[in-house]
Image (tube, rainbow, N blue to C red):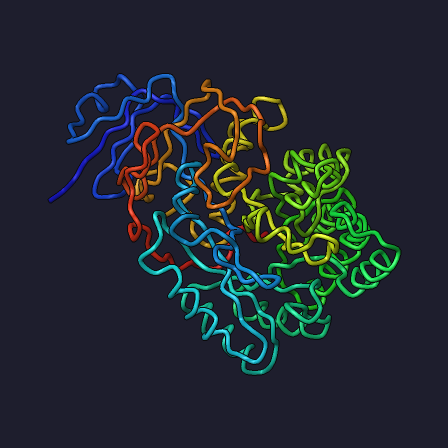
Length: 467
């Protein structure tokens, strides 16, 4: 049986257009758009009509950087694929790309199979995987080719975390050379982990154990240095590069310089770097541990340079790096030693609203909001135009967004499986009202109507954003 839904009277916003239009959905896909009130639109009939008068009709968000159930620092990220994707839906995100992990001594395939098993049948929204490459060798390089063919087209490497995920420059170069051949995209955690470990050791020896020192030892210059080095290695390999969670103005400058040279170098930042700062890390009574993540929060003056980077397209994507750990029982593993605090913040539910606040505050336009949160992540990771836009043929991943509703962010009201909010008490304007995933109502007028298992694994093509 064919099923049809019409969304009437809203302002449809994509990365390229704003138009008062009705949207016809048929069998999970967008069938047509027509200007509201025209005979073409009025002629449509459907089993379900959604009134979006006075609201925005936007594509579902694409969060290209999440870590559900990630093992880290002797514990696990507190959101499962079930709780994390449900929270994402509440926040207007309809696709996540999570990270499958290769363990040292094991194959990429084993890691991917493990993560597929974690997510299968659990997700409320659609999902894909990047592959964390922890052990570069000849077999790994061959597997990269196979994974690209299967739709896992991006590979993350770490210049940080020696002894865990760390790759040296030779391993990075080999992986980049391989991705230059097979069309994959290398994603880089750019921090000089070898130097940072020296600074950590020295800080602890001086008795500097509080959470704020996490930010002080992971210096912005070491993020910039690693970003520069990653760019040069990618240049040598002739490969594109995507730098994750950029937090410092010095790192943005390195990306801007590379892009001015015409290189296929891209940067992602996250809401925490746009709205939080070292002031949060310095909160007393170990509260600062809630804000420990890597790259770390920076002094407030960095924020304006990140917003500017988003306006000038020196930064292309805003993802969350959602990796939640509870304050009680997880973050407090690092009491007396900041280096033992699990690294990560909750945020998958907050991204679309915080970026809309960026629109309200005048940092970005409405279309740029959709571009950095929906369209570009979909293009960067081979999901466009199936995801990230509202156009005939696209999946009917659609959010009805009330731009005037006000809310106060709080752990009392969020749906992430974590005992604190990184944005506790923050007032924002704009709120998700209704969410459709492939035409099915997942959030209906602020009520969860979705289910675990609705979300399906989505293979991806190669990067669609190259120069």
